[in-house]
Amino acid sequence: MSEDLFVTLPSGCRICYRVCGNPSDPAILLIGGNSCAMTQKTGWLDERLSPPGHPHRVIRFDHRDTGLSTSFPKPPEGAPPTYTLDDMVDDIVGLITHLQLDRVHIVGMSMGGPLAWMAASRLPNIAQSLALIVTSPVGRIQDPTDNLPLMHTEAQVLLGEAYDPPENMDDDAGWINMYSKLDLALATQPPTEEERAESRRESEITYRREKESGTMWTKTNHSAAAGVRWPRELLKKVRCPTVVIHAAKDQLFPLAHAEALRDGVDGGTLVVVEDCGHEMPHRVRQLMADAILANAKKGE
Image (tube, rainbow, N blue to C red; front, side):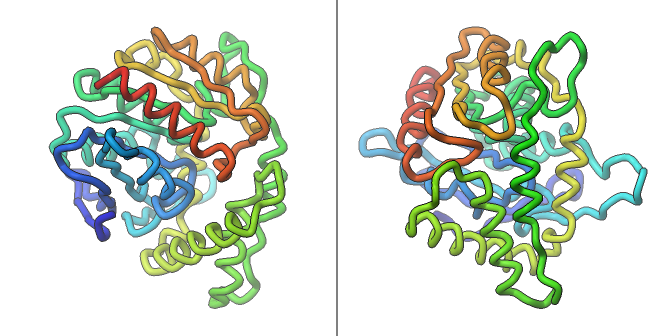
């Protein structure tokens, strides 16, 4: 994995990214979810998406308002969001352009799902494959014609219970503990010691980066940007092999949302991960990686 690299896009937004692998290998771009920096949840994919004999160049990045990327001001109460999902897709397309990627596999998780298919719909000649993990075609806002079950409320309750900032704003240990509690809040089985240690390590790295950049205070801009109906119609513009990977016990998006995603893309497939929620625990990681790679192979 490279050191932190930076690109300032035409919009003025500076994006921090890292690259793992050789420039000659097929590229895979990982797009994290709401408020997730590249140092959270996805690091395990670097090696698993480059198995022996099938190497890839894996690219991760900090969304705006996460990690070391640009921090945007929060809007006054009642004002429109500071930016939109389209603006976040501009960041993704700008990064792809900066890296001069003629072809790229795109993987989006949770809120990264709509960002992924929006990018793929804009870049039909560049997107080689698309993987959509624990996500939804519409998010929490629906039109009557969407005819989907409402989002589960369990995730919001669990995350709300885990959100417990320290009374002393300078209490680094307290903040790191909260980051880790949020990271593990949606676990459907008690985390193993290895998983707890990984979460603690990633939480400390992420917190210290976000404290340095100020993004720890502006991450809520993501929720504001995502608080619209996601552009389901753009799925029909996706021209690459697409796999939807969904958790049978997802506490946020019912399985019907994953089925609608599969049906929304020509030739889409669905992989259901049993005994798992809105998470990526160690016990299901190889299954998820295998599904991403099998779909990517269709586009190579």
